[in-house]
Length: 209
Image: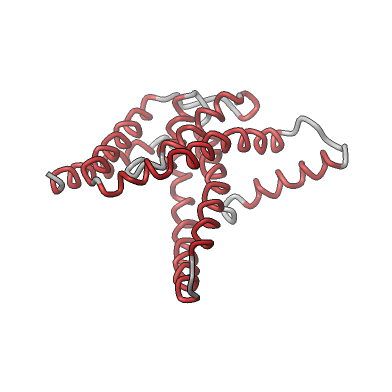
C-alpha cells in the first residue's frame, strides 16, 4: 500500500514540510492528510470499543456468510453511482467521517474493508479514483496499528519469522492486486465483486445450517 501510493504519500510529506516552513497553506495534499486523520478517528474509536464484540462473529459462520451477502449487495448498488463525482477540493469533513465509520464497521468478519469504504465514497458522490485512493490510503494507519498490536503479542522468534514471511508474500500480492483494483474502480466495475461475495456467503450459510 505504502509503495503503491508512494508518490501521493511523498507529496503529502513535502507539503506538510512546506507548511512547517510557512511556505504553503491550503494544499490539496495537506487537505487529503487532514481528511485521513478525521476518518481515522471513528475507525480507531470503533476498533477500541467494539473490537472484541465484532471479532466474536468469527465463531458464527452463518453471521459471516450473512455479512458477505450484505457486502455483495453494497457493491452491487455501486453500479448506479455517478460516473463523474466530486473532486478532493469538494470533499468535506463529513465525507471523511462517514468513510471512517464504514472502515470501522468492516471489523465485522465478512464485511470487506475496501468494499465498504470505496462504496461509501461512491454513494457520497465522490470521484471514482478519489474513492479508491482515499480508501487505500486510509487503510495504512489502520493496518500499521493492527500490525503493531500483533507484534506485541508475539513471544518467540519463530512467530516473528513466520509473520515476516507472511508480510513479504502479502506485500507482493498486495501490489499486484492494487494495480488491478484501481483499474477496475476507475472504469466503474467494482460491482462485479458482488458475485464472489454472494457465492461465498451462500456457501457459508448453507454449510452452517
